[in-house]
Image (tube, rainbow, N blue to C red):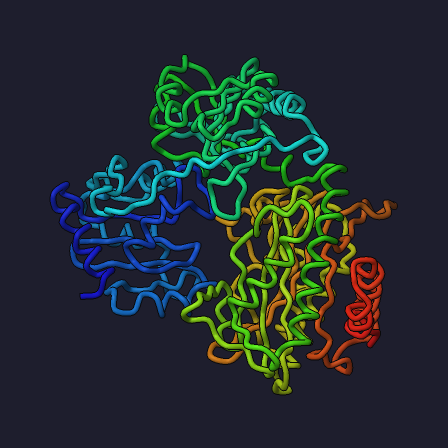
Length: 616
């Protein structure tokens, strides 16, 4: 029997013992994080699917997994033999997980899940959509005994981010948060388990602000850690009142100096899990929380007398708008990162066909170059080094046993990034290793044209990513091509490489929360692509910093400054398919790359870089 089919069979025994008809397994931790620590990877343990996004349901007779377009090809391969049905989310006639649950439980029954892994908003949505005959058990964590070698909950060392990097003290941030708590515009008010809708302009004051998002807590307390791979956050909760601030974490992650610094800022430190008991002791008061982010088990622990003000907290936007210090540091981080990526490109072009290379050895070499940069801490996500057909899987991940050998032909797509004290980077380049078909050059040039058009956008304040996305997709849509993902996402500052609420996308996807008004100081990736299954994949990605331009009678104009500093491979470009303006944008970018990186190159690298950034 397939290993994963066997594991699901064991889960069904547990379901029978607890009279569960459906068991629901999201990809989540207790904090609504996108990327999760090994302890939380129950869905992967049960299904074998290793992608970062997916939802599994199991009944006594069937099982299904939902994932998005980034992972269709990968999921189909990894689910083979498991007996799990793949649901391609977003495709025509494919239900959502919630719709599937409604279908499975149409005649009643019992649904079980771990309430610490699902948001309060999700619980309320289930209660509204499922028949009254359905029993919802949110006290059903996955049993440790079914996963004998389950990793322990992470408790890695944390550190304080100095103000020269953060740009603002915790004391100042807390002061701003408390001011925002005096004027809350809730989407809904929950009282005694029921909700009432309110107009956004109705102001309310919150006595308590409950924060569970790890990156928001890290930002507020200028604290960084290692509890989620590649995301420098600490497993923690926080609670802020008008006079006090409480931080809940494993005390062992703090050394004496870090603990003292926090206490000097007035932070009261409590054990990680004691948050549940503490919220249960709150007096009747208005509590600000984001029901889409705070887990339902924690909200259920609140006394019924508390009024829940459901709203996006003030930290989300404040964190996304980088301050002047952060912006200055980000420029420095991208120069460091550009040096590493450019030296990698030089090494790759010089040695392909001359020495043995694989996807993983190439990724390892790039990491070694980043590690030489001062202030580098770790990669900002697992490097995607994908050769030819492998690059058609947007989030492909190679290992040493399965990694493709690189030859002097075709494309190598490398999507990578770094965590530096000066910020977070994310860059993709698609490299020409040798001969490629003419059609591949057409695809590459169309991707490049779209990326350049978005980089050069000038727009009135008030625009959102949805207003600008067509600039990137336009050249591809003209060819009848598209890509099944957004064009870009927000990027944190020495935090998560994916950050709400800004992004580029052609349609609103509510759960992505990436459609806000673009504000000065926001950093967003620009990464259109082409993915042809069984053939090739192309992506070119730069990071853009939103800035204010001129202001006139029509309003405030905005533009983007490109932060990423690394050559774009010209060997796949068809200049005749580009406009004069597009060639000018590319040439100006390459001129800046050359001038910026020149001081960091040796004589041989300089000669190569001059050619790599030549005018076309």
